[in-house]
Length: 609
Image 1 (cartoon, rainbow, N blue to C red):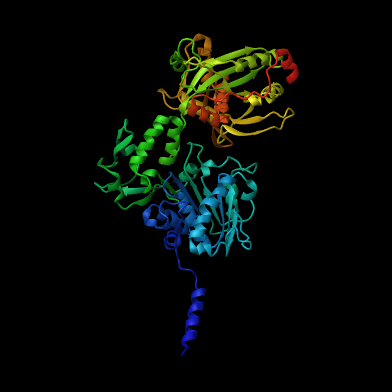
Image 2: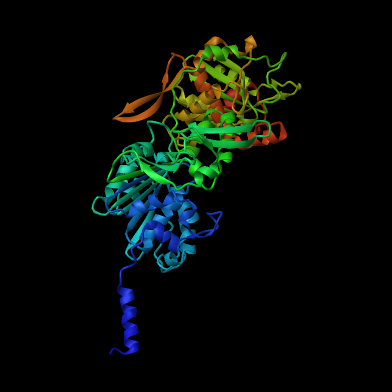
């Protein structure tokens, strides 16, 4: 017989040497994962039953036949928590080299600090395996963490060096529709990082995103090449399994009180109407629309969420409709988990011309416009200028479209511009208002003249800009002084500005973003102006087999469209001043650091030509 102490020791050694229990990702999460108070309204032990649609998605990771998992998800359905559970599972139960890629390095750093670190801290089994970054002996950093049998690296899709180094078995790609088209000059970041998994027979690639624009959405492409599964629930009346569809939603909404009264979902088979609680009382399941052994794809919209109600979704829809096309696009992406299809329709210049308004007798600026900006374009024989007024919700009023005839290399042309930009514009209340900021395009043949003019007038918020096309770039990209004149040059994402302007011009009733134009003949808003304002449309083009939207001209002259874009950029540059103006009703005037001088002395002193 084996002595009792020896028997106990043998059992202890056997327990230590035994392989871990065979768990799936969801089972691991139910057993070990703790939700952190910073990231969850319900901190404490994770429960997959709280959102049952997450179970099969997580457990697909454990299927040895499945290499790729695609999640085209709306907001509010826990997609980030699924990624965190996958990380926890591989760290604790199936060690491997892991990489998580965010759209940018800054977002990767934020994910590490705000989501990953709290999970490690509050999940004891992970805290034992990943040492704190602050520990001197940990060897861990914000973007790279070691654990027994593996490591996890966090990276931005815009950093090619971090995407193409060491082999990785598990790749987690978050918000792939926000990735740039190319990681530097290295090519598509998804393909770049995916190549790092090729040496592993048991590799996994998990792609997650809310979709963006149709034909240009990475996650939609990946989903359509997958099993294309939908979360379905049985109709309470006939039992027919089906996904929730916005087309089948029926609601009553009190427009005055802005409250959703009632929401029902119609069965696509029998037509019966049932409320949210009746539908969600059923037991759901994922139903595939295609067979695909290696890639499982899941689509889920916000109506399936256990964290947001149908009444809230309807309310958000009504608010998005009021907010215009861009807000409706965002709602479609984030609530329905669907791509937005750009129609590419050309705006009707004649309809815009017909809706011009009378601002009032001898009035330049309606009282609702609290601030003015200007956009300026240089041509070989003239300067084109538009002054735009701005109010609450970035509602806009065209104030003046003006042409200064004269070559940009002649001093008098710029003196005329100075006089125009320094004038006061009459309000309805009798007061005068000046231009708060202006942007001048530095492209074309007169870059040096623009730099020389602007560098001496930055104290008046007159800025040189350079437009950059391409999707995904914000209206204000950045700035530099890398030119001989040391002029502040602001880089402007013109496509983002064109998107906003086009969306706002499509508004037919007064709302945030609505565009007003004066009917007065001396303001410059002729039929020619509106043809130029509607001179471009968005069209789908294919470059090297890849779809992308581009802005194309439909008429020869597009200066009005460009000038409105530059006026928008000026507003974005001085956003804090605009917000102050909305609070106080008047914007502070640009500072004047120098005493006025005569034209003759001014030209000599500034030496700009």
